[in-house]
Length: 132
Image 1 (cartoon, rainbow, N blue to C red):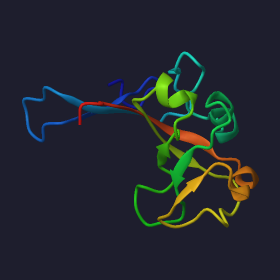
Image 2 (spheres, rainbow, N blue to C red; image 1 turned 90 degrees about the vertical axis):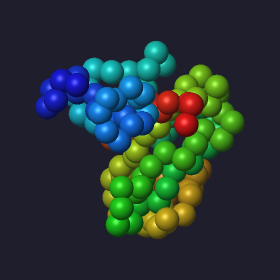
Image 3 (spheres, rainbow, N blue to C red; image 1 turned 180 degrees about the vertical axis):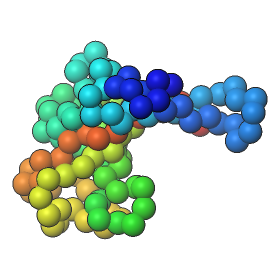
Image 4 (cartoon, one colour; image 1 turned 135 degrees about the vertical axis):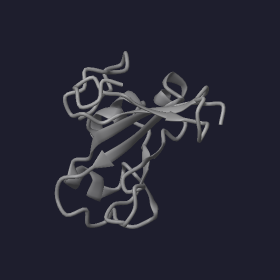
């Protein structure tokens, strides 16, 4: 929807062929996207801010510098405040720096010292259909 505009939303359908009936997920990636959750989370929100909103409970994500689309993918709120507030949340992080200490297919948590050093931030927000 609204392709190549700041308010672009990508719709992923559960069905592989038309007619499409069931939304599987929505994704937002434009750095200037106006969309935000009521708590302020949007594109560019830092890991530090997410942890604060999560009641200081660490957030999980998949490591970086791997050769597929899973790099930096959100892994969970780990029973923090946001797990109840926005259970449909999905996202992907990017980093600044060299990512040393947070690379590979492993699951990492935001309390890893390399996270603070690399200043992770959201570059994609997904809204997931909880029925799958």
